[in-house]
Amino acid sequence: MPITLESHHDVAVLRIDHGRANTLDTDSCRELVFRLEEVADARAVVLTGTGRIFCAGVDLKRIRDGGAAYVSEFLPLLSDALLAVFGCPRPVVAALNGPAIAGGAVLAAACDHRVLGPGTIGVTELLVGVPFPLAALEILRCAYGTAPLPSLTYSGSTYGGADALARGLVDELADNAFERALAVATRLGELPPEPFAHTKAQIRQPFHERIAEYRHSDDPEVERLWRSPAALAAVKSYVDGMLG
Image 1: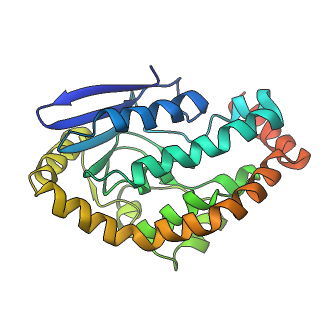
Image 2: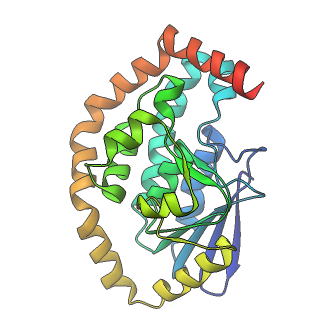
Image 3: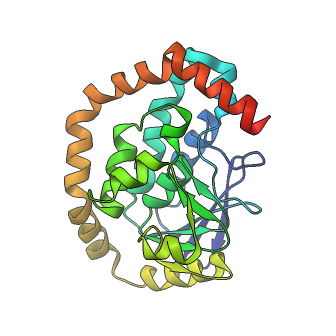
C-alpha cells in the first residue's frame, strides 16, 4: 500500500510509503483520500513519510512514461488528495522526516502544523516547467499568505532548518520530527472535536470557496499546460538529467 496506517492511541499515523522518494501518483493520491476517510473517527492525524524523505512531490517518471493521457488522469486525483488533507476536520500534523518538495511541500502546507526534522521544504514546479493546480496554490496561500507566494513559487528555492522556520514554512524544528508531531497531534486531539472542526472550517472557508468557484475553469488550463509538448519535453529532460 502506498499509504500505510498505524494507530497511536487516539492518533492515526498515515505514512507515505511509495517508492524511494515517496512520490505522488495516481495510486498514492487515491490511497491518501481513502485512508483519510478510514481514520474519520481518530482524534488527530500525523502525516509523515517512510525512510528519510517526507514526499518529493509528483512522480515525474510516470508523467514522462505516461504522457498526456496519464496527466489527464492524474491531475484531478492530485487536487483531490491535497483537498482531502486540507479539508480534514481533524487536526493534521505533518512530521517532515526529510525533504518536502513541490507537491510534498503543498501536502505539508495542507496540514494544520508542520514539524521539520532534517531536510528541506520548497515548491519547485516552475523549475520543471509546469504550473500549480488551483487547489495547490490556494492551499499555499492559506498556509503562508499571499505576499510570500511570488518569491516562494517563482524562485523554486528550498529551505531547511532555521531558514525554513524564519520564513514561516514550518512551525517548529525537532531532531525527531515524528515524536514531536505525535505530541502536538495528541495535544490538538484533546480539543473538543466539533468546535475544532468548525473553527478550522471557518479559517479555511475563503480558500475552499475560491477553489470551488474557479477550479472548473482553471483546471482545464492547467491540464492543457501540463499536457503540452513543451511541458512533457521539459519533464522528460528534467527526469533524464536530474533523476536518471
